[in-house]
Image 1: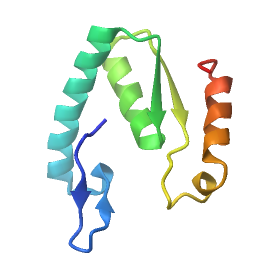
Image 2: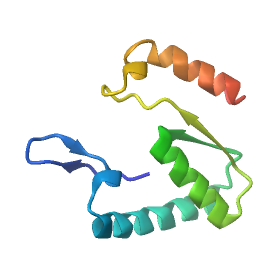
Image 3: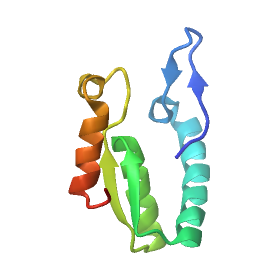
Image 4: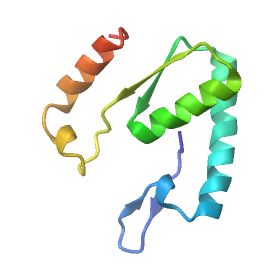
Length: 102
């Protein structure tokens, strides 16, 4: 969704949802516009968000576009997520199978 990386002075990753409101609003508007263009151009049957944030961005874009794409979510592979630290590949495969993508 957002091809940029934001780093704290400590080298810690700062996710877009943690940016100050004004910066986040500007970034989201640009990323949403691009995502809507991609959805309109490709007209996909299915979209998969990697994590809750990406899923919510996809749902918002699909709704705005009035697209027919089904939106699903898979587990984000973040080291901060205890669920993702064990059998991430197996869990994601099962999520994709449940969504009838795999």
